Length: 257
Image 1: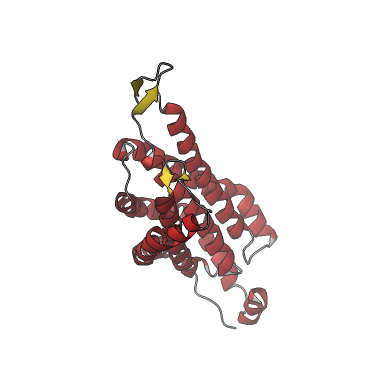
Image 2: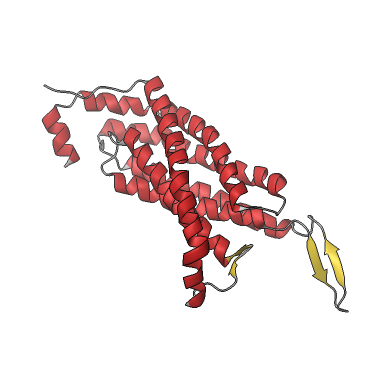
């Protein structure tokens, strides 16, 4: 009888951190290329066809197109690398990669839009004169854009948890395990992504750049990888691996198919 080797808590933690960071660094190379292609080529075609005129919210058409293209490229690569760790728990890599790509693209777009949102500006009076507005006048738009970032974090946690929930093991013990720990992954992702607006508003002050956004997310990645790795250990996914060890190889192949 052949079995698969079980992952320890430490093994699960460092593999998740390593693959997430490597995926982020390697994905950044593809993301930068995709972002430049979106800014200089794709956005031009969108404008010519009338699909994109001035832009979306605080972003102009070129920046919006570039951030979406770059985020899709990078998040896809990160999701693929994370699947290397989670492959023994998931039925198919496609759903994890799709969930991660969609959610992180939304997060990147919303976070960039918030970074570009001006905190100071000018308003026109009824008599045609200009009056300067301060950050207190901009609180509604800043709050709205911050909520979009937080909502994206909630979607990220829910979609990824659904993929984990619908993994290989649907035994009664697996279902009971998920009932007791199901909200942990969602809550952690919500808290981590909710931290982004708190950091973005004072750092960028409405003067965001694509280069600055890239550095910001590269700096955020180690924090995210470390805490989510600890969350996976807390959820005790390695216990599900013990179920895999108890299965004969033929049975595991049947489940995979």
